[in-house]
Figure 1: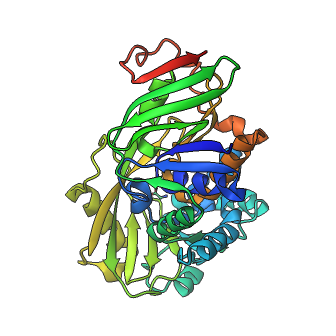
Figure 2: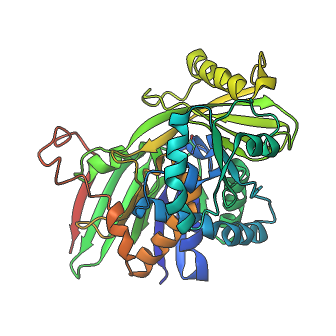
Figure 3: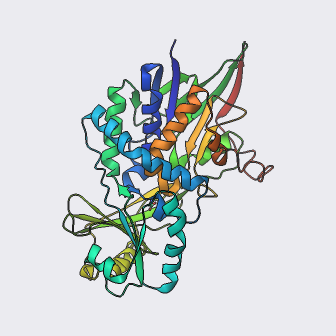
Amino acid sequence: MKERVLILGGGIIGLSCAYEAARGGGREVTIIEKGGFGGQATGAAAGMLAPFSENADQPDAFFHLCAGSLLRYPDWTAAIEEASGMKAGLKRTGSVGVAYHEADLLPLRSRLDWQRAAGSGAELLSAAELARMEPLLARGAAGGIYTPSEAHVEAPRLAAALAEACRLAGIRMIGGAGSLRELALRTSGSGERSVALLTDYSGEHEADRLLICTGAWSGEFEVMFGLPESIHPIRGQICAFDVPDGAVRHMVFSSQAYWVGKSGNALVCGASEDVAGFDASVTEKGIGRLERWSSRIFPFLEGARPKLRWAGLRPATRDGRPMIGALSDHPQVIVAAGHYRNGILLAPATAAAVGELLDGTKPEWIASFSPERFAAAARGGAEAGRNLPMREEFLC
Ligand code: GLY
């Protein structure tokens, strides 16, 4: 009998893990999504594949995970495009980081050497070089950095292509399932483990392995498994100005915002980081800040109003790193969640890691991303004792 894998969550992480799990045809894979596939943070994402610009503190395990995932992108998207017959919109435009004050130039200078050693291919830019590369940028920059290896993808198109590739690979895809009602973790007399669950609208499901890929909604599962609730939503408000394709040539990063030119005359500008619970609406304050920064960095946008505004809920963890790993007390449960600002970028690396976990091997680096890493610090914390729909069953 084929191993049955049940995946909760149909965003970019759930879809990419499902596609990986189904490779080779040895597993029966089902994805259960409470709403629509590729919605939530995936549907809202600007799709930047920018580990050097976005994770610029130090060459730690997290940076290497992000940079390694960028390297996987061209082959990974090519395989998805071939399988689905749909385009993901991968563009290797490179990025420029701009600094209008000496103080903002220092972090660009200090990241240059270690990032070059890690393959960024980056170069520092003078104000004149910046103006030549991005003629629409405001004059008066102190300098910048060019990172040619960075890219971006049309996240909603990638998710749609991935969903189609999953469907064509025979994965059972259940959308509109509503919330989880009940979860049972089972151990048979011979020690075999399995799971059974019930959602609002999709009935009962049984499987040998369960993957939790529920993005900003994963905190409830942490609590369910007796872990401190560390995954929480951070709203990102984002907008798009009506700007001709190609007018802004690279992704542009400043200390306050980023800009990415998308096809369809859309210069996307993001993003706020608000604590607003599960409220994914936009606010005048949030978008107003992006408008102000847009007209400072791109003076031709003075007075322009965005043609589109939206928001998504990023799944943040306490340390900003994702959770990828199996639970020690319930090894049939794997968590792949909490990707915060890097879900699109980290999809191929996360899927590869989950593929290894399903195969029974454990990548060495994965310890840094353990879903249980906050447990020791929080033992005896306030979350214990919440009323949970999870039970353990021991079958004879
Ligand atoms: N990765 C961009 C963002 O989260 O806004």
